[in-house]
Length: 625
Image 1: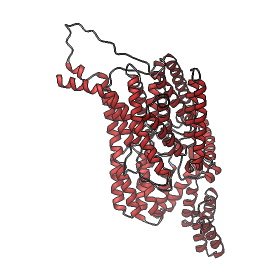
Image 2 (image 1 turned 90 degrees about the vertical axis):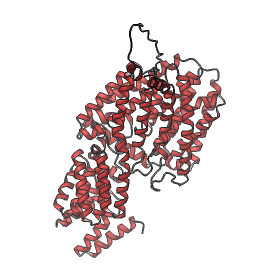
Image 3 (image 1 turned 60 degrees about the vertical axis):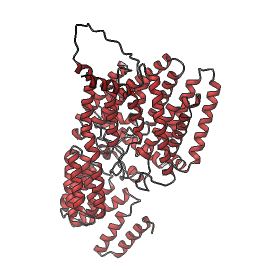
Image 4 (image 1 turned 30 degrees about the vertical axis):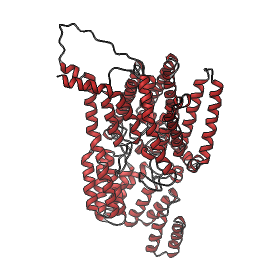
């Protein structure tokens, strides 16, 4: 079968270039019109890149110690998922990052792909192609970032939320800028590579415009690593001066650009981060050996929130990660996974050091030095951030290239008498195995991505008051990813709005979807709250109160739970309990007018106009009237 063989060989010639371009351009991939546009379409795209990578002939590979550490890490993550409160949801992943088995396996596959493509005999050429691909990608991101910094929303999204270009998150946007800057810096500064210089400027601009303190720190770390690498060269004085100037320019830009300055000098997120870390340590202390499993943090941490957390941060955006890779590892898999992650980091740095020392001065050493700067900066940025399908794949790919050991293809000599079937040459075993794995992944990821469109349509239909269309769209989305508990949770939360306004049909829909979510994740306070709101507004007050009792027992500083229980208690005739619950809700959410508005209505019904007027005045003051 000469045609398949020729086609395969031709594909193998272009496969490394295609892989490099696909990974670099993954930062631009998003899903227009989806509810959450920045996860599943990137996963689909990157799975395709891994599939193309299966065609790449023998190149570099990961060192044996790192491979073993990765296997140990994967096994520990699987064990922690099995011992978690919701094993299936933990294993498959949860909204919005879906870092379950598929996405974690994708990270590892991209690590291996980076080692294969950016190592071996063709490493110099492939690194050059990678820079060529990364330059236009980061330029496009920088243009979108500049538009968003000016108040525009070229990709859509709410005007009051912090944007993140095509990454969906401002910190991820900054991380991409830092990674690109590290890879492009030395070729841009040492030669007359004008495209690389343009890409470097765009990467630095993207980083600063993100307003992320972690990203700005990461860019400073890139400068320091590159300067440290130049200390042993004859141009060390010039390199030190250039590095100092770069840090000064970075500092001036961070202060001069309004969006960066506002974030840089804001203490709110810093205070919230310290509180989250303290609570995360307490969670880890209660689960020291197996953690709470991947994707279990968002439910488990609610029991460790304090009154200070409720007052300063609130429950609008519940954290699904400790925002630190060390605490994230310990929370997911306990101390064993933390040790495995620390060992993996040590092995990566040791391998990088050996590889840079062994590399010939010139392009090879510059490639590895830039990759080391990217990996070190990424590790530092993750001390206050979290992994995600937006930024981690690019970091994993670069890290694979950093630690790769060269593996030249060895010619195989076969006796002439032995006839090898053409099918073996046409379909190599490794390519077939990788293709099967990619096919399984796409079988999950493609429907999951498609589901984002009916999810968005369902939410829009609820807002428009068309509950029939909304239910139909949510059912369609759930049929595309029935394994995802958060598809049901998001549907339940969408219906709680009209349910709270007194729509019994919306209340019944909220109950149905919340029950589905709780079947998968019984410890979800969010699903429990949606269920309680559905019960209360469908007339099942006692069931609503009982549900809220369980939530408050697990999460004693959840202001929304107290507010809803105050409503339920008043309907049940428990007036004093109702007043106490609403006072507790106001204490836990001092910036919210809702508890005072409800208190004013209750005092009106109790015939106490003076107390009603005081509560109404407090609500008006909080609403800025």
